[in-house]
Image 1 (cartoon, rainbow, N blue to C red):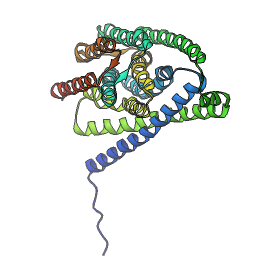
Image 2: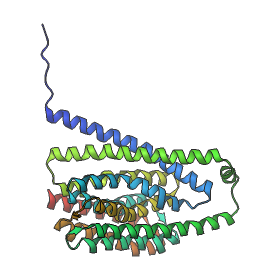
Image 3: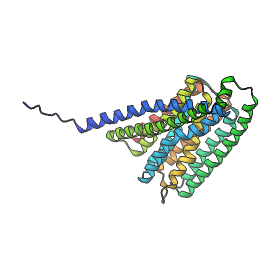
Image 4: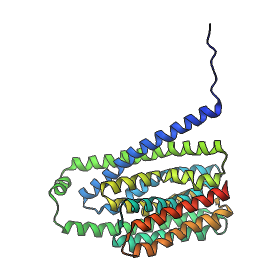
Length: 337
């Protein structure tokens, strides 16, 4: 007798495939973040550059690539809520959840450049985004201004890198570092590891976000909520994994530089480029202007006294950051679903 094939319910098949896509993306993401972190730190040592500079530039830009992909796709589809909400949500996640969780694992000591350059840049970028969005849209002119700000920030980081490189060269090099600098093959290996890590992070983050957004669609939540929460947390996964890996490996400068650098580049570079791809600009919903973007800017402002008190983020302060994000997420769940 022929066996009758039992059909799989569409919703169940879809949910299983989306969960699988989400899980595979997360696993590959962890692997890619490990390669990215290790390659960045080794390259910094071989070139005589402070690790925090690598974190603020190469690692930060690499881990911000998912936000760029999501932003451009959303802008081309006419979904400004998702594009802008992703940036606002991601930066809030970076500071409150990821930085706070990293400080819970181990207190974060801060360097002078972090306090005098990177923190003011993050605060200025958040304030600029809020001011530009007040009229309800981000035009190409706004995008150009954001992108110019990102270029200026990068130039300042490069100047700081040159200064730190001169300082590193005046120190007595360790034998293994001196050998690494002389060995071009090791430098090439570090570059390759860094490049492969960035590719894996970008591709896997795309899988993770596709799975997360698909699940959210099945559960019937709004686009703004998706951008602020699931997509923001999903595209922040590279920063989360990179920061945790850096913390476990003891490379705290990469962890801090990655988070702060990503927050600046998310606004100036990612949102700037996203605003340039559409002729009519990006419409910004009212709730983002009066709640979520101000929350993002306020988070950067709160970092000022925290960073200056003892020049570190303590475990207690990290715990308060994580608690604050949990409260913000609770408000979103109550008001946006």
